[in-house]
Image 1 (cartoon, rainbow, N blue to C red):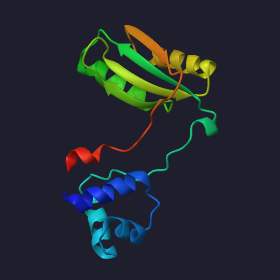
Image 2 (image 1 turned 90 degrees about the vertical axis):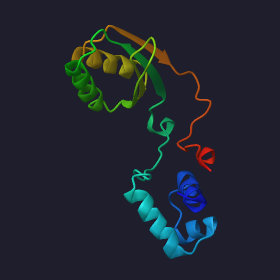
Image 3 (image 1 turned 120 degrees about the vertical axis):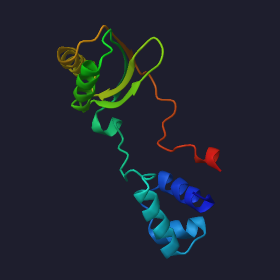
Length: 153
């Protein structure tokens, strides 16, 4: 991956709706080489998918909860059940396995406290957890989907 690839990725992270001509001009390439590079970045899995970023507030999804989970089960059967369970909850938008005091961190987006409570009850009915701690976000200070590509150059 060279500086042109990085420039292409930076531009696409900011605005995927740019035409190939606009993108090529922005990175200093002609259209065909730019398009070929994008195709290669997709083939290589560097570009996983292209999406629209939605505004949760406008969709009445204004509650973000970070749920820290502990388990006393550390076997493959429990892990498989946990992974399948969290995949089936659309409110869970991110799951991270952690090192430290907690085993998992879930990012949950929902409408309000009542919908979170309903989600919580469905979750604990599906999977055995030894401790669940919920932290309600008061304010989102920073949000980005852009990866720090400047660190790669």
